[in-house]
Length: 294
Image 1 (cartoon, one colour):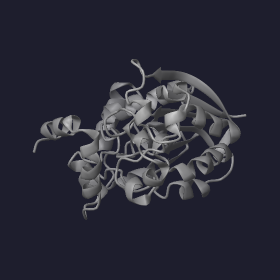
Image 2: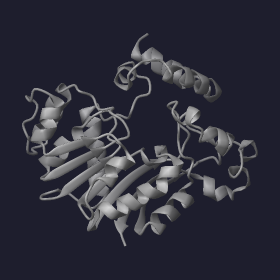
Image 3: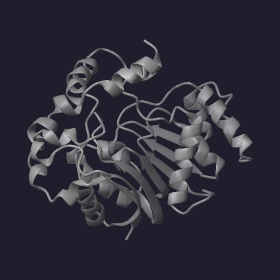
Image 4: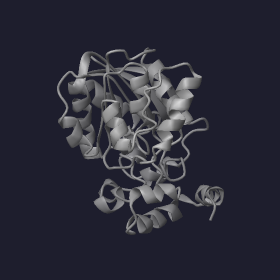
């Protein structure tokens, strides 16, 4: 099946069919990188150098920064490439950490070569790692480290060490029980002058609605469901904002996207506690927020 045909099939499949399909597929003995090559369980768009650079630039601009000279950088959930290390180095970063919950980054060194061509076209410094013998060697040359133990990896980083942190459609995937500890770790590792930029997608990752809110917490947070490729923590924007502030982070809203035609999933079909929430708590479908140490 071609990539286009597969994408068309995925788009047209109802959410209640996608759940059992993903449960079955996620239990097959296939490595994550193989699923990505098949365009299934795809971990973002960072394996497209042009798209990766646009995302990186969006977050840098959101943080009010144009260069990273002498600064340290951390990306949460780099997904399917380690290209952030290249872009950060080009703009002057002295050290970069890429932190994910598992090893998802492509080992195709050609991504770095293509990304360096983009940097050259833009007149930006080219670190020259496209000819390295492996992605690991390229990361060493870029003074970058790729860590794949999620929250545990963050806990190993020094206090007050990161100047610029960002994530793109990642925070909604953090397990509910780990979100408060994660917010505290972000506060701990950010320098007093550090800035974090986060794009958050509050839609379900089934059919871009709120179908994930139909399930009770007992079912949704069960490991069987959570490890099947469609998990989101179902935190609403007000709840997430409260967690950030309680962790000692100030919150600046760059953009807030609301459901244009009201809730896409009837609230009466939702499980507790969502069924009885004020509707305005559920109206945020996306947000770009800037966090700083208070």
